[in-house]
Length: 465
Image 1 (tube, rainbow, N blue to C red):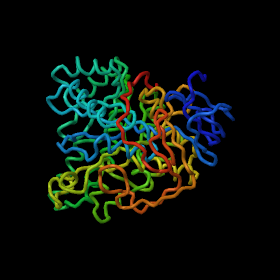
Image 2 (image 1 turned 90 degrees about the vertical axis):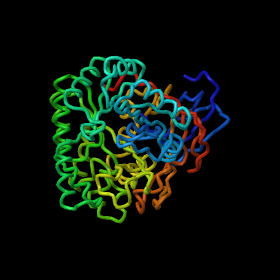
Image 3 (image 1 turned 90 degrees about the horizontal axis):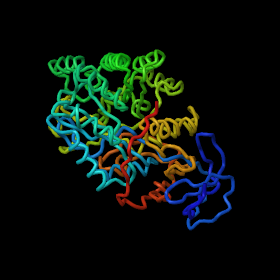
Image 4 (image 1 turned 30 degrees about the vertical axis):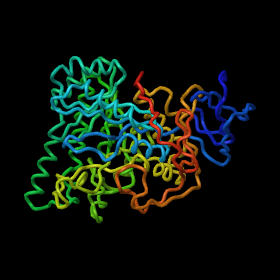
C-alpha cells in the first residue's frame, strides 16, 4: 500500500494484529500504518528499534469523565490537557468521554461547548457520549437525532441520581429513538429506590463514614437494574451497553440476555478486578469511593470468567477524577457523610499497565485478549474507524511496550490533576516505553514529549453490531 514518503519505521518488534502475533516491521506514512512486513527494505527519517519489545495498538478508553460537571454540580479535576496526557503516559491514544446535559439545557449546545473544550486541550483523539438528562424542549425530537446523524452515536442514561436519572417511560422513548437512528444506549444501571432506601436507613443509624458507601449501593441494585435494562432492550430491539458491571449476577444476566438474542454488550473496570469492598476500610477511604462500589473476590472471578467467554467485551477506566480537598471529594467538608462525597477515581493512566500485568505478565488470557479488551473491541463497539488495531491503512496509534519494565505506584505519581493514585503500592510489570498518536511521538522512553493539543474529534460511524 506504500505510496507516500515513509516517516517512521518501527523495526523488529513483536506485533499484535487481528491476524495474530509475529515479529514484524511497521512503516508509518502521513499518520497511517502504510506497511507491515518481515523486513521492510525502505528507510525513514525516524527508525525505532523495537527488538525484544511488544508493539500494540494504542489503547481505546471508551468510559472516562473529562472536564465534566457532575450531576451534583461538581467539576472534574482534569482538563482535557491533563487527562489526555495522562492517558498517553499509560498507553491510551483514544478517549470517549461525556458531554453531560443538565436539566433545561439543549443537547446541541452541550455537545458544542464540550467539543470546544476538547479542541482547546486534547492531546489525543477523542469522541463523546451524550449524557441525556432532559428529553424535553426538542431534545428528543430534534437535537439528539441531529447529533446522532452528525456522528455522536452514543447516549448515556442513568437509572439513579436524582438530577440526571430517567424514568422508565423516558428510557423506552430514548431506546426507540436510538434503535431507529442507529445509536447505542449506555447505562449506569443501579436501582434508585434500593440505593435511596439503604442510604436513608444508614444515615438514620448514624452510619455516615465512607465505608458505608458500599452498603448503600447493594448488589441487588445493580442486579435489578441490569435485568430491567436488558428486558427493555429486548422489548424495543435497541442496542445497549451496560457500563461498569461489578457483580457475578450482573455478568450472568448479560450472558443470559445475549443467549436470547438481546443486543447487549458489557464492560468492567480495573477497580472491580483488583479491589474489593474492604478497600473502604483503609485510611482516607474516600479515595476509593466509586459507584457501583467494589465487591468481593467471588465477583472478581466471575468478571474474569465473563471476559474469557466474551460476555464482558470491554475493559475501561471509568476515570472520574476528584481531588481530595474542598474542590473535589470534600466539597461538603472533610466530615461529610458518605452520600455527600464525590464518587470516582482516576484510572486513565493505570488501566493498561494493571491489565497488562495481570493478562500478559501474569498469563491470564494473554496479550491478544489484552489488546482485544482494551483497544480493538472498544473501538469497534463505538464505531471508531481506524482505531484499536494494527492494520494497514489504520491510524498509526501505537504503543511500544517493554514487558520487563516494572514500576511500583507512588502516592501521587500520575500525570493527571487528581493529586493521588488509588493504586499506590501496587507493582506493575510491563509499561509503554514509546507511544505514537497518528504517527506523532507523544511518549519517548517513558517521558512526555509534547502536550500540544492536536487531538481530533472522531465521528462514530458503523457501530460494532
